[in-house]
Every structure is written in C-alpha cells, then in structure tokens.
Image (cartoon, rainbow, N blue to C red):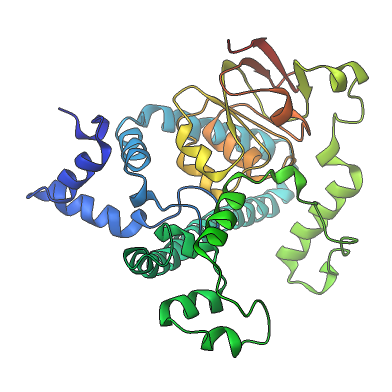
Length: 359
C-alpha cells in the first residue's frame, strides 16, 4: 500500500513519521525542514504543511513522480536559448552577456529562496509557537479554536495568556478590552473569506522608485532595465488593444503571454491561500497573483492565469521555469471563470477562452 496516497492522510503521515528504518529518519528530517513552512500565503492564519497532512503527502508524492528526463530536456532548452542569444551578439559583448545572465539567475533564485526560507518558514515557526498558546487557551475554554489566537493583537494575546489586562492597559496603542471568543472568531472568518478585490492596490499616491544611480553597477544596470521596461509599457504589452467585446464577454479574457504554450483543462480558482490545497493534476490555476507559496503546487498545474502581473512577475518567471503556459495581467479572469470550468489557454493569442461551463 502506498502511504503517500492513503485516504486517511493524518494516519499515514503518523505512520511515516514513526517508521523504524531510514525512511522514518528521512521523513522526520523533512518534517523539521519543511513541515512548518506555510501551505500558502504569509499570514499567521494560514496553516503549515504539517497541519494539512493531505496536502503535505500530496506534495511528497509528486516529488517521487518527477521525471528526470523532463528536467534535462528543460535545461537543454534553456541552454539552447542562451546560446542563440549569445551568438546574436558581437564577440566583445559575450563577457558582458554572461555577467548579466549570472546576475539575473542569482537574483531571481535568491528572491525565491528568500521568500521560502525567511517568509514562509519564518512565519510558520512563529505560528507554531503562537498555536501552542492557542491550544492552551482552547483547553481552558477561553477561546473557541486554537487558531483564533492568530488574529489577536500582540497585547491581546499576552493578556489572554496571562489572564489579566495588564498587557493591554500598559499599551498606548490599540484596544484596552479583551476580545471575546466570538470577536476572535469573527476576525478569523473575515480574514479567511475576505475578497482581495476590495483591497486597494495602493494607499494614496504610490511613491516614485528610488534613484538607482547611487546603487552598485550591476544592480543599477538591472534597475535601469526595469525602469526602461516600465516606461515602454512592457507590463501592459498587448492590453492596450483589448477589444471591447472581450472586456464585456463572460467567456474570454486577454492578457500578456508570459510563458508560451497551449493547454486545455479544468479551472482551479485560488482566491484564498487555503485554495492551494484544492489544486489537482492538470488543473489550470486562475488567481489574482502568485507568490512563492505557489511553488508547492506548480508540478500539478498545466497552466497559470492571473489578474495582475507582467513579464517579470512571479507567475511569469516560474511558469517559464516549469515550461507551462502563463497569461498574466488579464484583470478579470477570477471573476469570469469558476471552479471546474474547462478553459483553453493559448499564449500565441494571449487569451483564455471558455470551452464549457461546469454543470
């Protein structure tokens, strides 16, 4: 029996953690290294991998099914493109090209690894400690569920754990009354179900980017390239000619083709972080935008479509790395398509079209 696919994921995970030989040792190391990494998003209310056994085992199983030949083909494809671009340059530019390529590779790798190592894992460890306090409060009947402590302020949590108002009264900012169990439950449910579309993209007028002329040479060059791309509208390429009929249509969206390819499959809407656990093999993810937390499910999906983002967004970069099509910056995909709808993504037209609605 394959424990990684067992219907009782919690039981299967417990068996693997207590396995007597080398497998058990490996699983315990995996739990320590990855178990308390958040399973989507960066908020304390998001459960860690170890708290979602079905999701944890699913990602482990996918790791065992990876095709090494496919990875080698992808690497060869990238190298072929690099050689083509390099050969198109004058020989005296080759050294500069290699330097810029190295900077780009290191920069984007560090960006992703920083998000995984510091954000997802760091917040996950914070959640582990906070949840222990929550479990104690739940056992005492002070709060309804342990995870509700994650929506208390720092001083509210301290006051609840100490059993007095000292932490609140001594604090000059924020409420001076202990939240009721129902109030914490209300906050938790609001965060779990709030519509991200209601959040403004900026508070006030966004500031201008900092002067990059004072930065080190290699960083200045990168920032100059990004600034030039912004001025030339790279992120909005293709959007200015979106037909009004497409905007009004409920069955099609157009954006920026960030990774080439064509695919047809069922939609999996990822609106809240917990929705990542619903992604199945072959799904086309439609979401507002991607973060490093999406890396966990990328081996499952056959395409990515986002409302926001451009050629250098996270969705665009990881889609190119995984060799799956991506269309970003569609603005309305999350409102036009529903879970289970069959859609066709075609990067050659930068469009996502409805094939059939889920009955």
